[in-house]
Image (cartoon, one colour):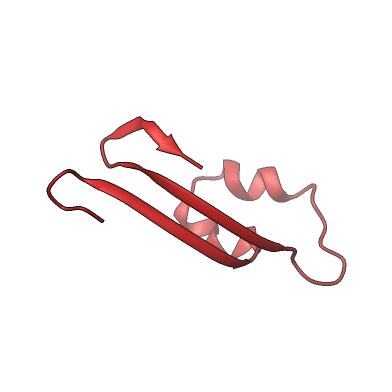
Length: 61
């Protein structure tokens, strides 16, 4: 996080467990994931998110 420019970069690695973050979003998030099933374990995920706070059009995933 660059506090001067408000640029950020998140590097996330782990297992995809969408229900674990239901509280971060509105009802659309848990509703979206209802049709997905993870039979054994949630899949592995690696995500990079970067952008600038208050400038959503600059966000890249």
